[in-house]
Image (cartoon, rainbow, N blue to C red; front, side, top):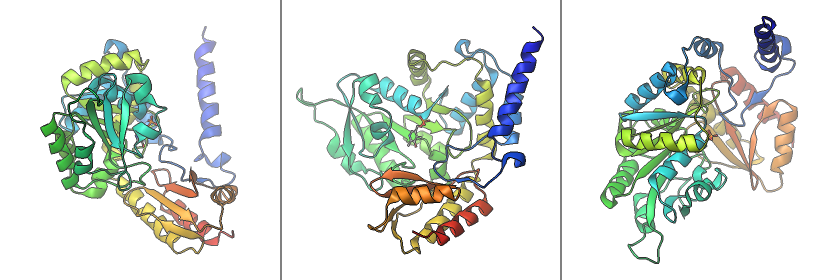
Length: 370
Ligand SMILES: *Cc1c(COP(=O)(O)O)cnc(C)c1O
């Protein structure tokens, strides 16, 4: 009996020392991972906050840390309520399910995460089809949306929901202007359509735009999905925000999807920590991404660097070079980047790459012989 906790402790520390790249004893060679802002590990301060969290069974509503995170996040955006979920895919899918009925259409960009990267979830979970719009780096306009709303006619699918992404993922971290968000919001209100924000990286948009606050965002959208596990550096978790009535329904759908978690306050504590300490520093990620983008645009083997607005850098190679072999060559020198297919490569900055690591990555790219 008394051996049991000792085994658990043992496993914990064994894993920690072999997995954490920041532990000097195992840092044989340098790895700078720019594949995504999801690759971050919790800092020791975040881990302390997690380990100290009071927890309870959240399926019974008993987890004080989850309750606190939900209350603080809702208040931050001026929303009535919030729901802590395992992933951003789940918060988006719950929102689509809550807002729509089978056979309806969801208007979104043709590069939207809900359309491309959620496994066909809107069809699978909600029997809804996507009405896709070709946007500017993933950003769609109010007038494009207006033309995609179907007239009331039994031939046509009923338009049930509009969803936009800010910042855009496949669009390379582009953010919306306050004016375009306001136009979209007003259009949806006038037409009586619910408007959902896939705000996986909404804090990147808020910090970079300096044009709107969390309150402004809360006022413009009916529902909002926010990822804690991207630039904010948490190991797990997303939040869905909306009215009391919406979150009550969302809570039921989360249960159906198997997303009810028990003592997940340990994870929510990371979220509380991140909302306090990891939002303003996103500006550093943005300036480091700009530095990488500027460096890349000088190299003869690079064809085009897309505008760098936040923490994502997307670029293409001159036609004679092969994206996968560049990716492999960089990997063998310790720099991990991701390939988006079609010769498009991507770098993402985040809180586990400091200035020195970005300088190192720039000089490695500079010396690349291909
Ligand atoms: C990452 C991401 C999501 C969902 O992410 P999960 O990996 O499911 O947490 C949703 N939308 C966008 C735009 C994203 O970048």
